[in-house]
Image 1 (tube, helix red, strand yellow):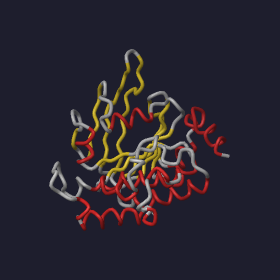
Image 2: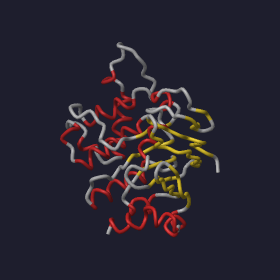
Image 3: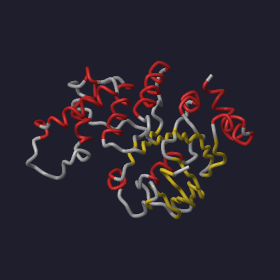
Image 4: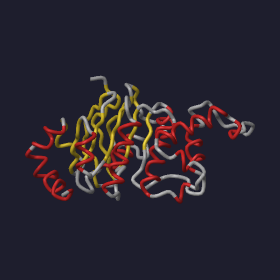
Length: 252
């Protein structure tokens, strides 16, 4: 397996409190990988370490073989890794179309220039419309993003996440707070837009996890206690004891 993400000996402490306690994990190119675990296990902290929002206490993260140590989040994004957040992160007063167009600027060669009139760029317009069509929001293109439903806002954020052309997509609880129908909509959207890409997601809904993931890692108190195919993780006695039994019961 060729690794898209390779994590070695990763640790993170805040003062005297160790949150991430020595994680080793390799995620293959094109793999859909879910990270699950109880609240407070360190899942979002792990995402923040991978994307350089937090510096690690020790250890390393590599993207396609390149060590990311010392890089800023925007530099990692330009190397092909993009992420969403637990809390929807859009520009609510801008139109749906403008949100996606902003995300396309760097990928289409626009840099820090005051002379480019982006509204005149046919390539930008067509690119943004193609993404909106892919996430089923083309008919909502001119609405302020803040008036979209919750599920539509999450879909828009996924569109923003993929707009830069990243081949590693990280989604932090993409279906949190959704109804069953909204969850089904987002799951199919994720399946479509990450086709051929590497997907890493944190998710609490076990139906989503077992329906999407090729492999699952279980994080408990800052340590990965199991990694494997969904059936193997489901059958793992340690996982059942630490987390999965209660999580599956909660889903029913």
